[in-house]
Image (cartoon, rainbow over all chains, first blue to last red; front, top):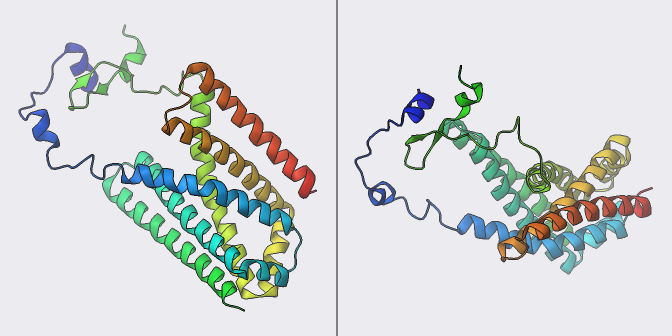
Length: 138
Length: 141
């Protein structure tokens, strides 16, 4: 019983040193890469989200040809692709943390992460192909 | 008789040793604060915006597929369900956007004083509600 063990002050002897227990695990496995990518994509999304929302509001009620012409203009296509890259990267990193926090079984966690990243990759590719099609439609 | 809450005083130190301390936070007895509430709201709106990307992808794919599919998506967005989802997306995006900037300021080392993080929290709430209502009042009537 963990509670009784804690209250009576008994503890399991740990024979390995603190250094020995962490050696080989790296900087908490992946260092600051995840944290840093989350912040960089967040910073990129600040102007991109503002541009996208303003563009949408400027085209409220627009018909398909006008909207497609807008999306196909070179800089609009570039910014849409940049938005999709930053957005999906940010989303994958965020959902990864959510799954890691709340799914505790190693197997289910692994499957959950793989399914989430796979689904996001497919959605991202679909959106990218759509923008490229609009960009090269002429 | 022991206090029943003792059953929850079963923490573990980082070396795996059992220690007598509560598992935190105690959601049943934890008074919500502006900081903790906005923290979980940031995560909830992030997940919601993740679901909202389905609509973004559907919209882009429909746009690239021609007038017919695009009209179908536009019809869905204009329906009452679509409008509710789009208002939720507006509010979630504005909140996540404003609170995200607050997070970036923290990451740069600013705004950790108690009065500052409380004020910035309430500012985020105020700005995101006001901006959501303003956008819908002006553009989406």
